Length: 291
Image (cartoon, rainbow, N blue to C red):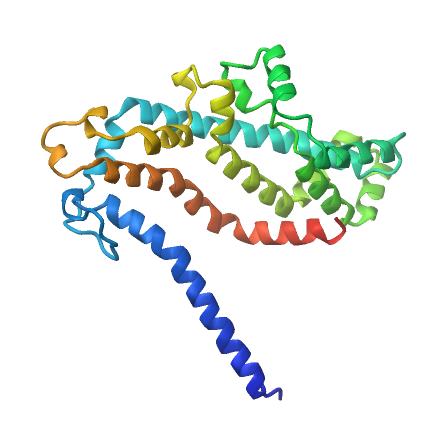
């Protein structure tokens, strides 16, 4: 039976202490954020909170009474769902194609895709391309440019190459077409890597705001939640900027509104991540073995 030495025990204790320290450093800011947003903001200014003071939901009620915020949540959900679905659809098929060795010129295409990871055309050519395509001041500027992700494509390709080749050969012998082979065999077996890249894409879409500043800054109807938060953190200096009744003004301050909006922004990611974590870890591990 293995008995850990004194050095092993000291190493384990040190690791445990470091993990606890990291846990505290990462969790306490979120805890303060949530507690501040749930407190009577007039009594907690400048204090670090481990528990809410005079708990109230007035900050959240005020936020959700603002029609602009509700519309921005709708835009964020729409771009996260549609953008992720389209990216998965195109990237997974492209990843499967470049995993096939029997296609003419496939090595050239692989090198071209990898080259795009190292070199970018820059902001101005990208903006001019998006403008020429007529995507500026439209919702589709959030969806179309991100429909192909070379990094995720390579992850998917590497995962597909780890699947037994006998599955493809047996299906082809039975007369399966390439589309049938992909949609009925390859894609269902790729759940871990699909979950991993879906999480990548969804988080990226949910948190994105730079593209709004570049392409839709003049159209408030297309502001996502993260961009509204970005503007709020810079410009909300008075609660009069929100539609709220006089009674609520006794419990709410601009700081508490910013805290509530930040919690609303990070809450969906905190809810979704634990359910996808097992697929995320497995997909990343398998996808990176040969990468």
